Length: 102
Image 1: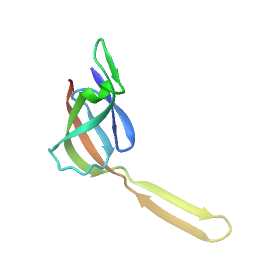
Image 2: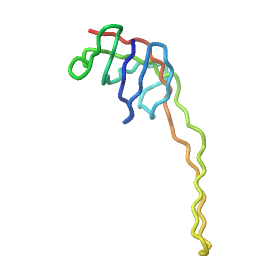
Image 3: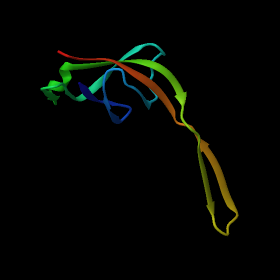
């Protein structure tokens, strides 16, 4: 069984027990969050549209963190203009506990 959930403006294909990183969520560590389901499928049926609202995906927040540092360097040739910047994207790591239908 799997589901496609929408969180942080992106969609992820999840199964039970999967640990994945998403955009930073406003939730405490070890708390449970319910994710919005776009599509779900078990062995015989596919649930989409209005049927997907019957499916619940519960996940536990494992940790919050920052991603790998990106180095941004811009310059303009022959103008002696140089700018160096860095960025670390914050994320939330989630573990999918259950996918239940009905």
